[in-house]
Length: 210
Image 1 (cartoon, rainbow, N blue to C red):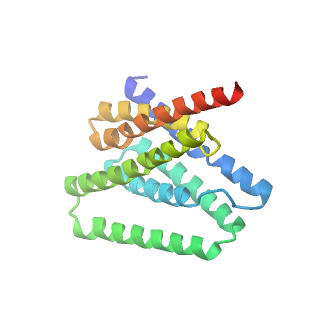
Image 2: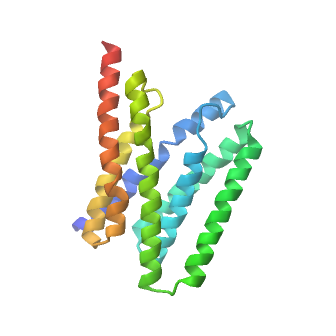
């Protein structure tokens, strides 16, 4: 088995593991029969992100990208359905979901109607998906100041942070093998934000024990 196949399997395993960290929130909701203290927008934005990269994978005919984003999108849909079942703010959730669906429809119409098939469509889609993904993964850095000041890591998901680090590393290597810099940019921004969060989790947990 050559390196590209090994990296492909690493990407699949680590990415599915990262998406599966949401199962802990699902378990909390089922046990408490409530969606309190669970954020909805990460599920929704991740689902949109998965669908964007799924389309990119289909255009590129990359089975690895297609597989992980199909699994990711299905998991996010599951989380969204369970959240909608337990939340008390059903109208807000439905409004946000409808807005996301509108954005997705407009984007689909733009890419399939206004852009010619081939490299132009693929490159613009890759750029759009990369920008959206980088914005998503950099957003947790805004929580660093609050976590450091409070010393409270309860809002910091250690499994998700570790999974993000290994996922980003494997995808960067995979993207370099394919000379696909949209994949490299997408995940190259994830590793730097996961490293300080991982270290911070270790340090603060150690301080709390002592």
